[in-house]
Length: 332
Ligand code: NAP
Image 1 (tube, rainbow, N blue to C red):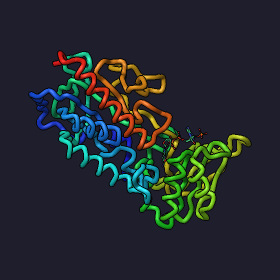
Image 2 (image 1 turned 90 degrees about the horizontal axis):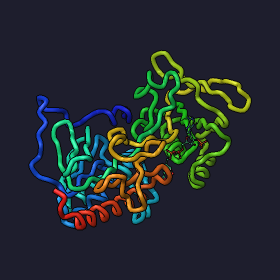
Image 3 (image 1 turned 120 degrees about the horizontal axis):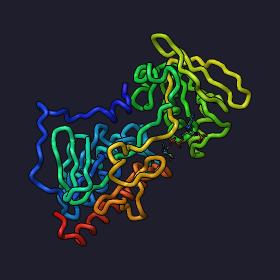
Image 4 (image 1 turned 180 degrees about the vertical axis):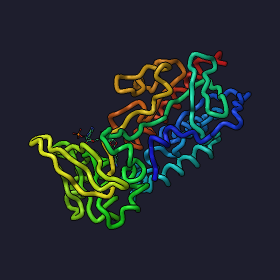
């Protein structure tokens, strides 16, 4: 099963005997993050003939790669599988010459010129950097969650739904992710109970209509999960009704948590300005607080989180970085 926290923390490019090699070349643009924002930036950079490096991070495609069907990306009237969309963007970036490395950035120094980005096995230098590291699912932080994470608790129905054939699942949250992924789970599970802290969903109307029409979906309104129960395996969740204060147990074999996202900015907190929620602060042209460093996609916006928006901001960031390079020919 896929554990996003682990995936975020795991480094795929393990050190070879502890050797860190410095690349001789200086890239025009280093893009940190291989998901819609990063790949779109790479497509634009490649077409501008910029020497471009993409460090994909551990999960190629980011959040969209865990989405079963993307129905709102223009040009795909029948929808497209998220992983396939990400793979197509990867191929398109490669076609225009981006050097794509399956590695995670482990450190950055934006006080140097050129800017430096490290992975476990190499140090890269770039005249500009685009931060496109996305956002990751938030955890509930209740007892039982850590114990069962990856073996009964998940943040990815697309990855783990298959294991719930004819079983009962609880989905926590009321946003697009909860409902979209909950609907996906109904293909396998015999029952999906959505536990939501209010009595109205936040999810888009079209998802709401589908959820309310789905005979396998049930709702526990005004309820919060207090504990995930079980000895060897998950057996259910203890929920508290926030209006009545009453607690009850919902029996379940698995729990899928969709209670929002946290930005992937651990590397950047002393390097660029972050807002109080930890998102990278950018202006309307995707400039961060550091000249030559730009940000795009979910890492700089908690508001929209749409593939098309990530792609759009990726394109703007690349265009602005290109302009920056023209205006700063003296950059190493
Ligand atoms: P979200 O919109 O922030 O929704 C999070 C949900 O979790 C909300 O219903 C929230 O309740 C609930 N929640 C937050 N903290 C909680 C806690 N501690 N305990 C219990 N419940 C809690 O996050 P999301 O659903 O992951 O969506 C993120 C963004 O991605 C959105 O912009 C969404 O439109 C986008 N997205 C789009 C698609 C699509 O278009 N196909 C699919 C997935 C996601 P409240 O409602 O009470 O705040």
